Image (cartoon, rainbow, N blue to C red; front, side, top):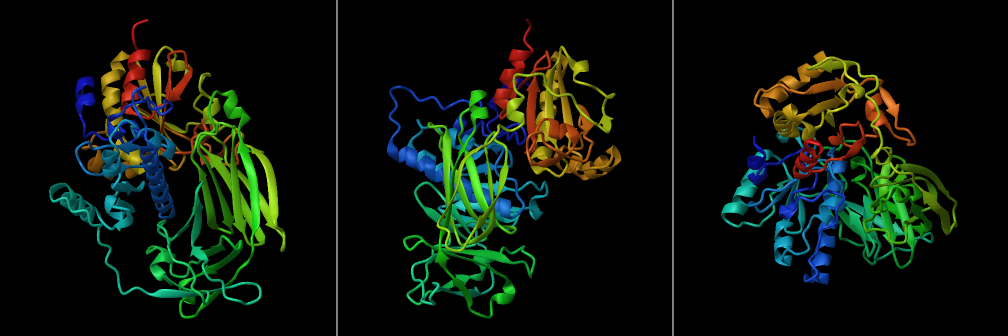
Length: 530
């Protein structure tokens, strides 16, 4: 495929190479702000619409996460179809930033009326498919249902959500009281609460809002489908978090399908508030801005509250506040280009506030590597399509590292595009090294798993570039609590797949690649005659 053909193909979806670079026709690197003409007035309505769309994306992220998906990272845009296709790979802020503020507001709104999210399973029909259609998050139960819906929308303009027919709805009866046994009216409940800067949203199991409150008797009738996902094991328990905002009362319990034949009582206690700030001096030293910060509270294995701070931090820090009943919890804090920190929290009965002060998060391992000699490939246990190689052996050539796994749907679906890049640039001095994580024991096991994938997704083609099978087993990322599979994967601090990293001829790690146009521009620059 020529460069010209690649740049003019409006329907090409570079699943592993495109991470939010083609939304509304824009092809800027992920680190670049969207340029606005001095003559352009970015209205409050347009910015409000963008913020609303970001909230939609986060709702979909939470749904996909609960159902085994890996959203969001890569994004492809089919220019003429009335929906946007999202796959696993770049952060929400990137998607948000690539909504062109110069586009008419109606076009922005219309484009985001229909969003489809796929999980990391390369087999569509067994995957989790979520749609956002006219303000509703809906479950798309099969590839056929999705295709039919898209056909209806494209041809006839039908805007109705995909039907998710189910048996007659059952309800769980929940009774809320205060410490004195008096009913609590006007309280919200959800399997999780999602705190935004201007409001709280109480969520169903599918990540959509649960917009009901307790009546004057302190009772709620909650649809069972709002509490339990269809694929949840029969006896698995789900959390129920309750909050009365003005009275500052909170309650917490677990519910299983075995509890549905009786009224479930939640005693609401005065809220204890966990507060604090998050900063990253190390990220600032690298010239990066603290942007997306995610924090959440774990009660046992359950995430009960999540807060997403999605704006750039001009003052250098982010704040969090969580109202919870007395008890023991874990607070988990992470963010874009940041380490993940877990903090044990204990709140005594009657304790109003626990101030954790200023929490300083280090930059992620990968964020610290750019502009420096790339770490060598460590404990590689097998090679394919070439002899064992070190990065020193490749000096004088531009190297593209693709961190992938056979279990990763976007990795699999993106390989044909990576093959095209290899075909176009190998004779100009590009070396592609596909580093597979240590999730398979041998090349033979990898080959067995790739055999059906090769026929289904790659038109029978073998991967033409170097494949390095990472070894070393579970390995902790330097400076982080997280373990990943493989020594090389850990050395680079890889926590999402696929991740594509570019090195120049001197072996310096240049940048992470988020889009095809960015990759082509960088390759043309790095491979140009000196």
